[in-house]
Image 1 (cartoon, helix red, strand yellow):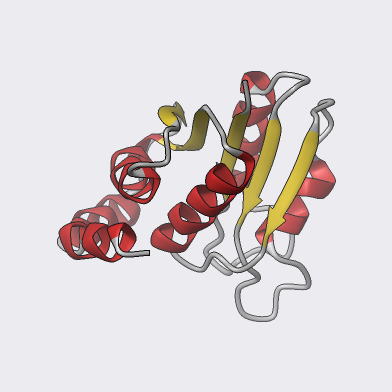
Image 2 (spheres, rainbow, N blue to C red):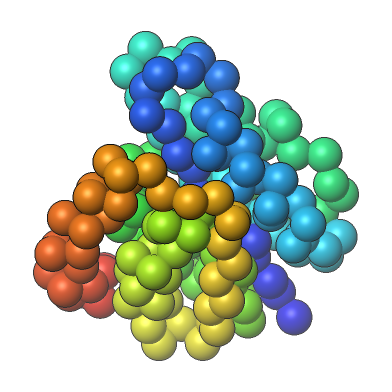
Length: 157
């Protein structure tokens, strides 16, 4: 059985290192991961950040796993979802464990489910218990308006 633990990055451009939200996701993922899992770190470098979120997470990871995969190309949640699906198909994954924040989990889950369509992989979502700030909650609400369109885009890839 091939299982992928996909950790979605987060940055708001205010820190040069691992943002606390991203660090919480990473810590949560370390509790979820097993030694025979493949872990996907997904996220790009914002602004003048010296390293991509994916690289920062990979460097901070301490648990033994079968393999680590770094995806620096994902700039959006749809980009994260497409990267997860590409890896799942390439590896013939049976299960994907998606790790993100509670306030982001539903939208990320919807997009990852769309990209995994017909891949044969099941999806399990696990989220960090942190709450959303008012700004993050409003951003998520606004982003939901695009989910149906993005799901169609995901199905066609």
